[in-house]
Image 1 (cartoon, rainbow, N blue to C red):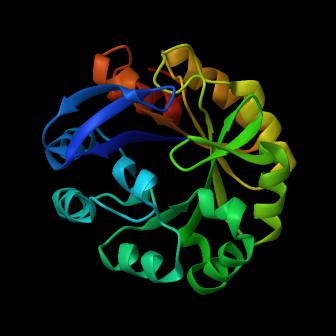
Image 2 (cartoon, rainbow, N blue to C red; image 1 turned 180 degrees about the vertical axis):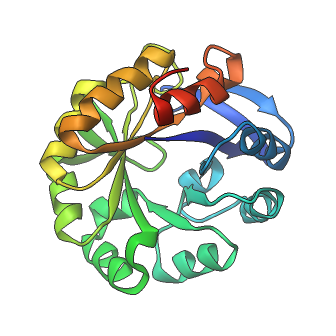
Image 3 (cartoon, rainbow, N blue to C red; image 1 turned 180 degrees about the horizontal axis):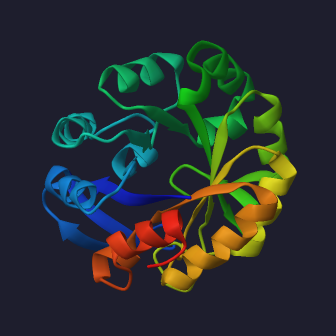
Length: 245
């Protein structure tokens, strides 16, 4: 299982939100590139980066910051937030990002997702962010009108290689990851799923590993827990790789 440290960018800084609320923001670093290097040095294999400003604007806003992150680390980076056209996907990939995460557009324009998968293959990831099992759009501000599991099945049919599933109600809360919902979505989709939202301790890693044996959860995104020190990133990586922290 891969541990993905989260780098959420707003106003050029590294922040974390609680339950996706932009009025519940905590700033953890003024330089996201330096924070990225810290996580890479701790052993991270992959970084999960979100342009929060881009998610609201409907187009990338912090691409220069993302370029600085890519330049600072020798590990791959996946980026989400406001990526809604084939042209924008191309621009993001040209910036050095390894994977592009499509969110709102997966609901609004599934044909674009299908074409993106045709052009860019496994570099396309779909992020399904849900509250009470229903997908949410536009920085989690709008209900998508479709169930998360139904959307996951449609994205798998469109050719998406993997899905990131976030339980919005747990994101940034340190209440524990929603293992059951993640496993159910992985089963519905039949493709690898990366868990996100609420990781509070190494016990969450162990629970996801157990679920992974049956359902195909290939990784987990960890944010606030590593910023607050509730989870030691190096220990989490050892646990994910070797079964012991």
